[in-house]
Length: 367
Image: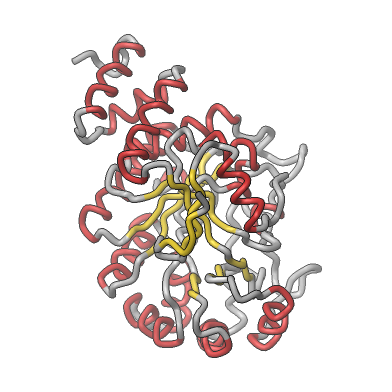
């Protein structure tokens, strides 16, 4: 076989042969895909794999994003959402205050609350538990997707409880699943460079491993477009693939491009549409044991999201309602979409919209 430094077209042909025979791709194969400029062939391969798994169905959910606090002890270089306690714009909403907010936006078709926020050391673990409990009591039929693995690690530190005990406590209060945030790039070099001082790569993986062993299904992400190498991106995917082999607990992978906060930010340019589509397609090819790859319209914008549905993506997320974290970092997409918007977006890509619940059970198919 030609080496990684050989002819890119020949390497791509070798990778394509493996994909079409259902063979698992290697680290070297993933790097070869990134080194190829033949985006259409890579996208076609990813689309073939996705259609074997999901046909022409593309999923979305009616959900709402909630942010209890933006006070955070961490200082990740890419984050523009966080504030220090007492700083202008800092907030911590009481559970009752969040119920008031939800009541203004809730409708009976809403199936998920997506909760994340800062690592606020000025409130106890019980505060975070109560946030879940009051929501579940008021809206027992809405799935609660809350707290990233980095937040679970933070709760473990402030409470003195193990990951398992933290998760059991939250689950008893009403937690149903975890989002995939906090992974960023699972590389020690990257995390040091970008001042990611929250959960380490191993800790992030161990939180999800623990959740899976407790029977929870969770999500996984990758935040790309900063200082990571293409090899680090592929190694990140391989770490997730290994854990998925072990537990089978991940439902979806969400590759998110880093957003520049302004023209004066350290990150000068947005990730190109070409790079976004290539990363989504490569994710689909590398993560052969993940049911879904998500094209997150908040980061991609609606038109690139439509294109991504021909490059291996089978999910466009949901209605969201007033997304804050990516928009605080400079996202130019809408901060929410309606159900009709999402159906139109998916049909516009010649795919079949499937409204789902959090666990990918179909609620309605829009033929």
